[in-house]
Image (cartoon, rainbow, N blue to C red; front, side, top):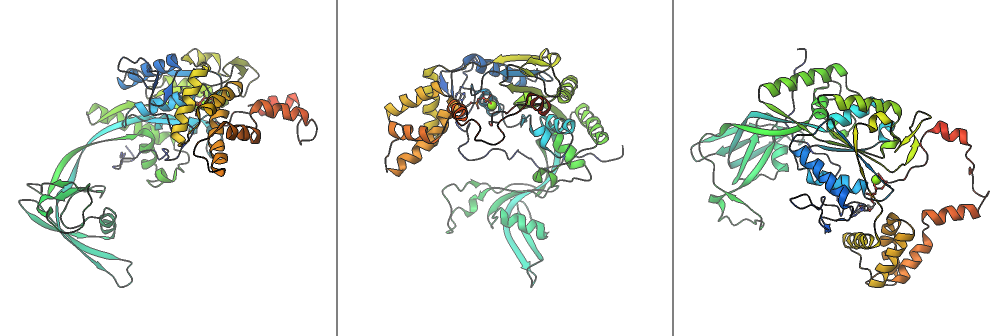
Length: 470
Ligand SMILES: Nc1ncnc2c1ncn2[C@@H]1O[C@H](COP(=O)(O)OP(=O)(O)OP(=O)(O)O)[C@@H](O)[C@H]1O
Ligand SMILES: [Mg+2]
């Protein structure tokens, strides 16, 4: 074996979860009960019972490790909750099971080949749970002493740490000093230091210090001073994805690339070595493979090469569950002149289980609007709620949801607490929905630039205009 393959020691989580009110921030799960029956209105989910139940069944199988290398397609008209359900699945999966979400068009916009982008996405969705023995230092901090050089550029120091049985002094370098100050470690804290990664975690404050006068928050946790040796061996379990192992071991990339997200292409030979190594770990009982979920939104935007690559990848031993979503009916497969259902080639369609989503009833739309209002902290008068619901039925659900915050702005201007019908009406006149926009374009014939698109160019370009939602 040429290179040493390591799994790294840090636990990394995707940083995609954002704390803002996004289009799907109200979705907290699939809203199913223990028997996987959909509840009427739960975890931010309303209606679409069959699809949610199907999603729940699939999840159950993933969690039992019984399904991998399979593919599911959510097919249905725009804004019928395909993306929302997939995100609900992600929330239900649990911390340990990887979930990767890409929009098909991302595959084309990265600075790497399409197949490489897909391979990375696939390997991101396969977790490796690794058991390792690591050396740790555990004890109560007695004293931290830091000496700064005159310029402040280098720091050295000493850390005195004790258990009930012994006391030791460690020399500190700049890196450890920074880590200690970042964690705000003080004398009297009980800490654990992972010797391989240098990661410091605070367990709490020692009971012996509970009477100290210094200011403590209400959430201060008190723990006993540890017993026995200061240095111990401890078994730790951590989950990393195959892609993370790839990047960490790729000599040109290194660890930092994981945070920068700029990973470039990874050599196939390296991947092979890693696969062999992981298989070895598995046999030794050191590692476990956790097939996760890869969600490809707007999957009709992939082209024929990607589809055939996916076909092959699904048959691979290390393959995640692939969930796709498409809002296309019969449409051209990108990169060919063939029409096919959902814009997917028939051989791929043959391998997937198709779950369809249907448009919502008026009552369901009303409930979704209410949920969104709560999420965005907007109060509608009951008349306004009815008006917005009927607007959603005559335009689209998304348009109506977008109007909520616009109408709120208008109502704030007149210093009202609640959003009324009048605010909605005004928002409706400021912002056009798709139907009115088409109508308007017809009326404006000729006055806009680049209106006419000849048939031949559309065929060359591939995808027609797509909805913006990802
Ligand atoms: N069953 C539901 N319960 C609660 N909210 C929903 C539900 N279905 C959809 N929504 C919300 O409605 C909006 C549109 O739904 P979503 O984006 O999931 O549609 P989509 O099927 O992915 O459409 P497209 O094909 O255009 O991508 C989102 O804000 C979504 O969170
Ligand atoms: Mg979508």
